[in-house]
Each structure stands twice: as C-alpha cells, then as structure tokens.
Image (cartoon, rainbow, N blue to C red):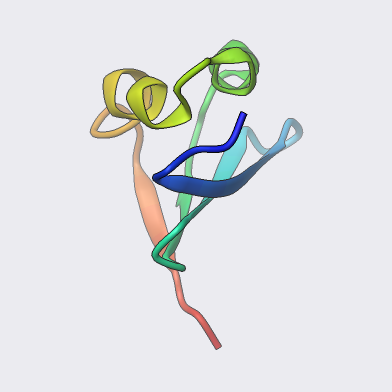
Length: 67
C-alpha cells in the first residue's frame, strides 16, 4: 500500500539495517532493527503510522547524503 510519507524501504538482514527513503527524497539508515520490526512495517496498512510508533526515535539512525 502506498504511503504519503515513505517512498520506499529496504532491509539488510545480515547487518539489521533498515533503509527508508521518504517522499521528500531524504534517506535514512536505521541500525539494529530486528527482522520482525521490518516484517511488521511491510505488513502495516499505514507505513507512516507504523514508522512513527515503532521505529522513529527508537533506533539509532544516520542520514544518507544524496549525490
């Protein structure tokens, strides 16, 4: 289901890093995200709401520079 906030997301299970690209074009890496959190994000009816309640301010993150 499309999100009005999140454009796309991907998960690297080996490093437990969640990469989120927002509709604004900003990209962030969230560290040490358990696979079940990613699975629930994928399944969530509202990706933005799930992100705000279960990921935002809960995991360390790093902004990815756009080239």
